[in-house]
Length: 360
Image (cartoon, rainbow, N blue to C red; front, side, top):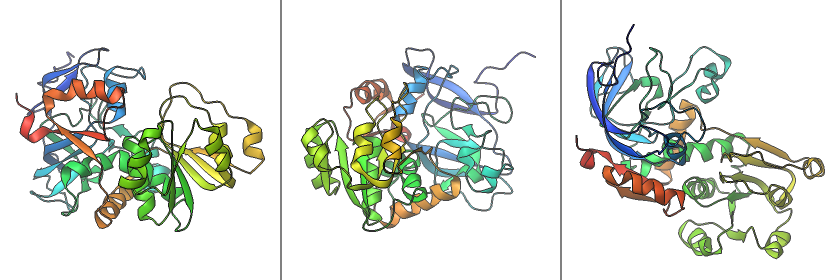
């Protein structure tokens, strides 16, 4: 059987921007989406956030990329069509899709509303779908997904600043809840003040938690404390500051995806503290057993969240007026945005205005 081209493998014509090779450069790309099946929701994409993983995947830095690749898993828009068995959504609804569009729906994880830990989870882009075709992400004009993996966006949450919450938001919200770092009066550290870190500060503060931002950049202090509402700020390279803060934190959400030392962070925590990694450095991190044993401390990890929790997170964000700080860009600026993101030159998330600027 001859494999069909991306343009002809499905009935619905679609258009987006795709990477074709390891240069990671994106350019206009014609492809197709499936017909809206009985459990599917189709929507017009209005905005899509740019996540650091989009850059890793576009350049095949994790070694799993299949080209052509259309990135984008912080996707929001307006429903245009629903399948005959769809119950939760109707045409005109404001919706979003995050990092996944499928799972087996029958394993322990799926039965526990943790589709994100399903061994057969289907990623929103660059993964093999149920029918064997490759999934395409949100740097595109239309999206089709099973209603189970669609999130409702509350009316009072603007779509452009809400989009990044579908990845960055749930990535930090879930560990705050799961590891019990959401109790009023607790003291939590947030390492790194980027796309993930800045929303971690906002969610933790809304939960009533005291927040210390830990960063290598002293120039981020004013931003962290005055604009984002952090209670304090530590420069991780300042040994005096780090020494003075030893044993003060109940837990830490570490959002940094570059290799960085663990012992100074472990030292900041009280006994029984939990250091949770949500950033993914490419090389292994060094851990010293004594740093864990001495205070019964834990190092853990967390990966996005299940669909039930993702909806809870979006509803919580709408209730507490939590949004990402974004720079809205046109589609044809995406390659420049990727370069700037690599240099850390964004506060704090790029969001593509797909509806107004994606032109065939």
